[in-house]
Amino acid sequence: MLNLNQQVLRTDVSGMPLEWIGYQDAARLIVLEQVTYALGSVLFRLHGGTNALSGNRTEIAVNAILATHGSHPAGRNFYSGYTPPLSNRALFRRDQNLCLYCGGHFHDRELSRDHVKPLAARGQDSWANVVTACKRCNNHKGSRTPEQAGMQLLAIPFVPTHAEYVYLQGRRILADQMDFLVSHFPRNSVLRRRLEAGQGLLA
Image (cartoon, rainbow, N blue to C red; front, side, top):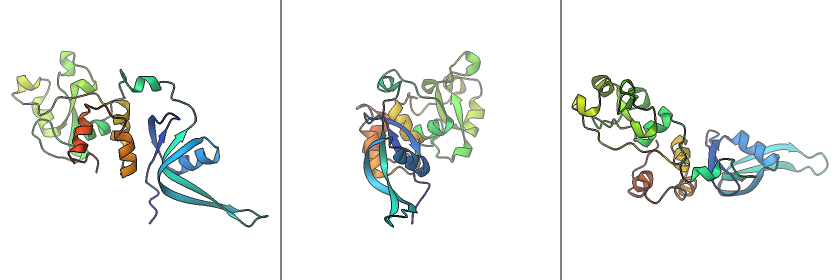
């Protein structure tokens, strides 16, 4: 059965992952001849109208990965020194939906963003200073550091690269999309190590 919610990975012409798009945006890029090349399995075969002269019906094949014309204007920064925007969705995925204080696994609605160094103590709202915490642990910690609250942090927060951020934003990532994204992760990537150890990050 055709899953119209399946996302397509869009890249620039060099293959740098840019974003996830739906089948409608993907078809629009193909029709407007903005796609340089396509990779991966064919996700959709979309049918259009019938040509009055030939009687042929148009068909658009949408692959899992579409490389589009041009390069991202900030593309060179995606490899080093780039800080992606911070969102709870990506943060929770980075930390595998685990509370990094009690170690419990929770649904998104049961989680919160905790500032390791509290904002009240001039801590930053940044990837390197935030972790996923269940609401109970976050309330208990309050405006204190983990040491002051007598709580142990189970992992050190890290800043994802651009390719890792695209990965964290994805839903139902297919095997060929996964392989493509991981090939853009740094060799010392925490996410790469988790995947190689067989620990999936996305539900």
